[in-house]
Image 1 (spheres, rainbow, N blue to C red):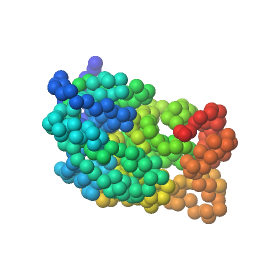
Image 2 (tube, rainbow, N blue to C red):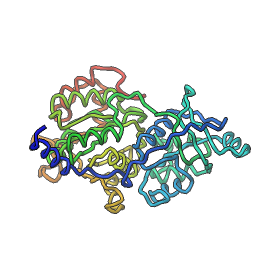
Image 3 (cartoon, helix red, strand yellow):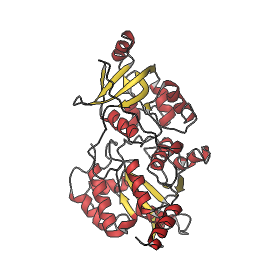
Image 4 (cartoon, rainbow, N blue to C red):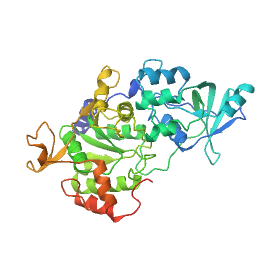
Length: 394
């Protein structure tokens, strides 16, 4: 390799200044071969997802299911006990029977298994504590109304939580297409010398407002990281495969492929509006994104918060609390006079000329097998979505 090409590589490398992960470094879980216990807990799918995200740095710097002091600090202050911003509890619940057995037998190590009885990890120096499901729900979701899809899940949890340090027995791998860990995305970003990467969180197929927000961000940033949530969602949300296929159609036909990638995030939607927006931002910071798009009604479900609370919550934190930069967009619509998607910052026309684009409207049209107008969604995506049956979670 010539001196000139070596010099160019050096210059690009020194110019690449990717942001630090949450709390400055990715925390790696230690492994152990110590299974000196006969007490076992079988994890459900949600708990395995959380263990996976702890183990592969998505939830860095967490190295545990939340301990008592951390749990109540997250509820009340949106911070761990050590002051680190954290807004969504990552917990492991256990039954009263298991709690009594652990305490009666002075058990200090618990083995975690999946439903095939594969040994995944151990908890050591365990701590068991009680909690109020009503308080949990009100702090995180702004309500203890069980009609909220995730509040209902909270009230189905066991009576006790167990926390402390996790030591892995084996790598926890999910069979998910288009999944990359934070370590893998960081290696790719370094290799390509990108400085500015904008994340787009989604749980829906793309309509024109989504495309508008993404392309606005791409005008000033290097790369777009489309990162759909692939796991549990509420009834009548789109199924994962349709979200991914719809985005593949959009990217293939309407994006410069070298400036956008579609990778999935295995995590449940909690519909916790502002708190979940912060949680999503922290996760994308760990993936090494420099920016995240937070639109109106981020992590929305019904009317538990004001429309822009998911943007305004970031004003509660200092600039060193959350390093990733939040791009705040207003609600977008299609204006029949402007003949394009726009917002109140650029569109001067009256409401009668505005066609508001919403996920709810899109779902109704797709359910009724109606092609959406081109002012709402790309024709290829609309045709694809109505072609199939069973597109929605039920």
